[in-house]
Length: 245
Image (cartoon, rainbow, N blue to C red; front, side, top):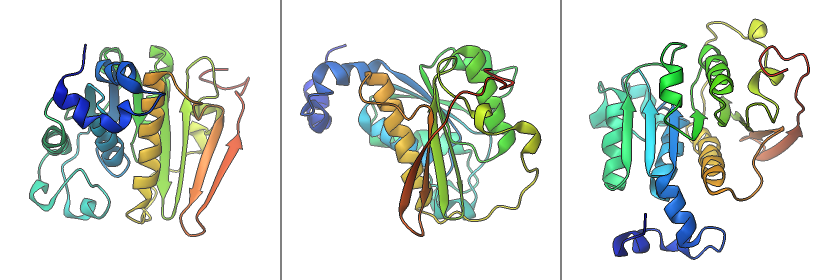
C-alpha cells in the first residue's frame, strides 16, 4: 500500500518523523484497532487514531447519545442526541478522513461475540466505564492473545496501562473481580480528563502498530488533574492471577 499525493500532504508531519516516515505511515494504514466504548475515553482515542491514519477502526458501543454525554464525549454533537453512539462516531470520523474504514458494532461485547470480533483486530482499546466490561475485555483479550490498553477515569483522576497477554501484567493482576464495586454512583469526571487519558491510549495503539518506543506495560500510569501530577507505578505479573498466573 503506497501513499498517494493527498495522503502525503495529510500525514506530512508523520512523514517528517524518522520513527514513522513513509514506511511507518503505510504500516498504520494497514493496521486495525478496536475501540470498545464510544464515550469519554473512546472519543479522543478514536479521533486520534483516525487522524493518525489507522486504516481500520472498529467502534463498539450499544448506547445512544444523551445530552449529558456532551460535556466530555467529543465524538458527538447536540445533533447526535438520541442516535446510536457508533453511528454518531462513524459520521464524525469519516468526516475527518473519508479514506479510512470505520466498522461500527452497535452492541456490547459479550463472551459469545468476542472471539469473532477480536480476531479482526491487532490492538484493542478498553474505553468502557464499568468493571464488568473491563473484566470481560481482559478475559477476551487474554484468550484471543490480543494486546490492549486499559484505562479508567473518575472525578479528577485517571489511570492507564498496556497489556501484552502472556508476557506482561494483566488487568486481573491488579484488580480483583470479587472486590469490584457494583452499581457505584458516577462521580464526574471533569470533562477534559478523558481527553488526557484517551489520548495516551491512542498513542499506545499507534506505537504498538508501528513497533516503536516503549509501551506502558508492567506499569500503571496515574494522573491527578487537580495537582497535575503523573505517577508511573511499576507492577508485576501475579503468579496467583486467575487469568494469566
